Image 1: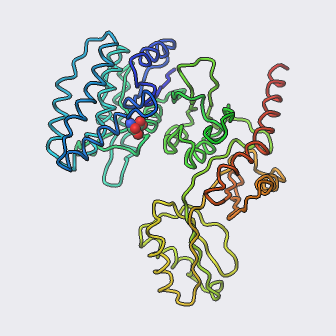
Image 2: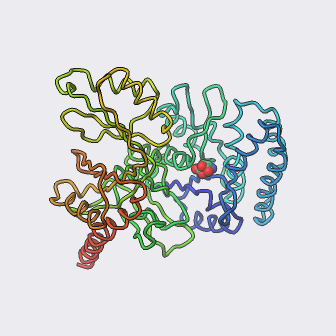
Image 3: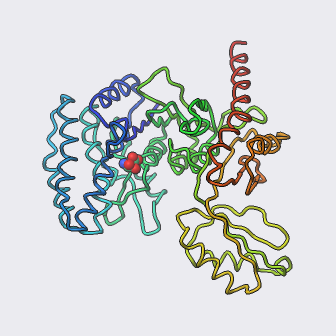
Length: 452
Ligand code: ASP
């Protein structure tokens, strides 16, 4: 039986935490493969190593003094090592990285940004007495992106003869050997890839919070831990703003049907979340609400649209030509279509509208900015009568106007759009009126079931 553990940046930020991780890993011999992030923040206002490495790159490009920043990175690792009672000298590694930064070569940016994980991998391997296996040897990208099939075969074949290993998170390599990174937070993905590759019985995603919370604790400090959720729910949730997990991290383990536990290794009393497809759902239960702000919605109304075959396709083509991704298409009316688009494309809103207007001269085009989307997630919502009614009633009672309301046919997610400024209030209302009461009663039922 094999468990893969991934430790995030805050978990490896200090020597004291690394020592606790050593005990945690040692407490179960099934914890045979460990994936690590780069050291994160030690206290509010501190800087993550990955961000410091990025600053080195920027300073070098601007001709500024990057060595001061790099010196601080070295100091952080050396400080950690000095408190760990291990024999490890990273000076040759530091020198090599500094040499690459000095070249100022843009093709090396991913290499530089990934070195936080690489160095932490070397440290953790020494602390645990596990073999260090470089992610560049296991995780492969080609010109289309991450090459899943090739990678999974490589991980399986390379790790089969390695009983215990530490693998640095966040990066892999192109087929020509050049280092390539995932998105920020990508060590979660590495952990899931390794878990699938070694056919783990469990993927433990270790963080410093008590699992996945039913909503953002900055908005609802008393938000409870979701004890169990399915992969589909967790992915929706992560995508819509639950930062505890990278949304793509769930794909490899989901495909292989490997359960994931999100837990806090520093607090054995803390609750944790099990993500698994054998989770039982009470009818009507909502797992949680996650929200993201800053979307805009572009709507086009054209009176002759309805009978016009290919109208929707031509609008979609205009959006695609501008290289803009559509987030959602809320239901329109007889003569209109609407598209919700992430705020990162905000400066393309007007050019998009202009391109639509050029093609359909008589159309009315409207853009609404600063829209927040709230995703209310729960497989238990399917077939449960009155869920949408309860949600809208709760938001209305706070005097909040719903800009958009959309329930997918699968009934796993309900999306509500409100103005950005109303989002936090709407989340609080939904949590208190529609999520917490149901969670409490289903928890009570579960306890009753267990105690016979
Ligand atoms: N160190 C990277 C970041 O800060 C990757 C990770 O931690 O997963 O995003």
